[in-house]
Image 1 (cartoon, rainbow, N blue to C red):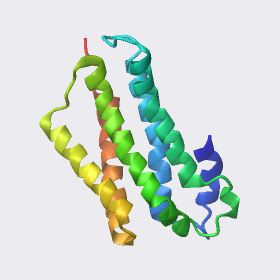
Image 2 (image 1 turned 90 degrees about the vertical axis):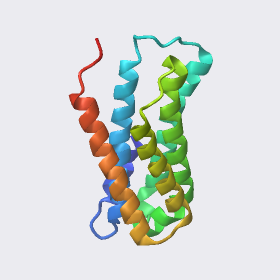
Image 3 (image 1 turned 180 degrees about the vertical axis):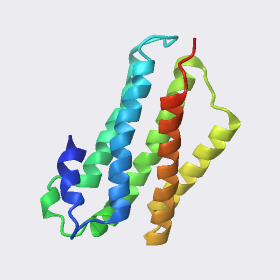
Image 4 (image 1 turned 180 degrees about the horizontal axis):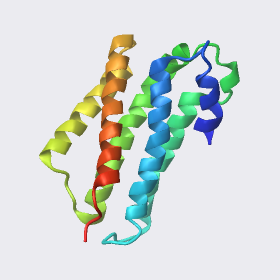
Length: 167
């Protein structure tokens, strides 16, 4: 809800920052992707216990925290979304690393699944990109990191949308 509420203010033409707007869109999509993935865990081989439930619920908490950072508690009072974006970059990208590691650990913890090496390389590059964005204030780096993340989001949606469920 916070993304919807604050997102409208962040897209106001006079104050919008394209990199920030891209992350708003990606995190909005990430909410749906995560819940879609959770829908697939409702049956199957998952051995549910409290630690497994906690591990599975934590990415949703991280997404909420990222949403709260992106739109602030009073979005109408933000005079520059560019300045706001760079002021929250460290915790936002730190949470991106946490989110990625959590989402990779859930299939491993629940089913012993380890992604193929190519996927691990792509994810390692993502972690490197998020860490770079944490420590850099250079707009060019943030544009490149957002573009890479957008590509990953598009590929993830395509894979989830068009991959048939296992028998």
